[in-house]
Image (cartoon, rainbow, N blue to C red; front, side, top):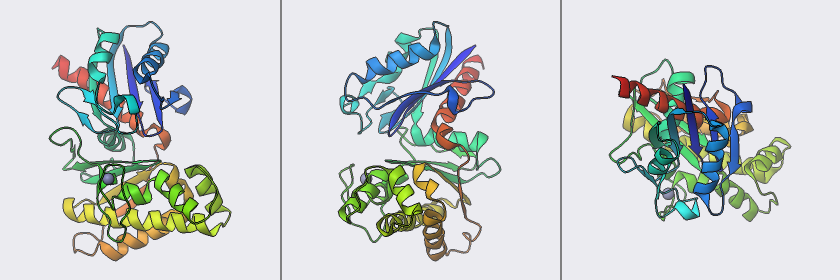
Length: 300
Ligand SMILES: [Zn+2]
């Protein structure tokens, strides 16, 4: 029984065959294409399927998505921005497969619940901070999907103290402050000459002050947003992954300080924010959970 997972992520499109023991070496990935996105995705899926019958495909996609129609419209993919029927297209590619779609953050939350840092809690927030910010919430042991499938987008929660235009059209969103692209842009405006989150994290590690300040800015904004969400949902665990978190204490210290300063309600002292252990596999692992549960649902 071959089960595949697909990630339509912030910076890459990736696929993996779901098995008991999977690792980063098994991931096949391409950068997000400029055009002909479906053609590239189809090639990637055919490559990993290798001519076998596919039983199920789980898809973790950037939003917005429409769960009921299976249409995705991720804002960072230009030829899908107006909406692309990803579930229909995948069903045509693999006619014997059940195809299940969820928001990237919903898949991340599923992965942390099954394999990661929220296994032993019922109420949690999972985040992945790369170019963009992916988020998903679990309440009472259930991952919150939302009315249209787009719940959990903490990247567009407003953070006080910032008034930066966001890609969503709003202002002051967390992603516009603490997302990797926003951090690089801010650091460039302060005279730093690098071009990627990884370079920014490395520069901070070498003691470059602008890079350190960028990570302080990100940590503070993340901590404020986490404190707000924790108060709203009464959660006790937050797991944060992604390249921005590789900065270690330079990010985590201001993040924890902001939580300590703002999460003051009597039910929040147990709130813990911890690094993710899933590396870059979170979205794919969650898409795998989605695919396997779609098979179970079909059989029951
Ligand atoms: Zn926004």
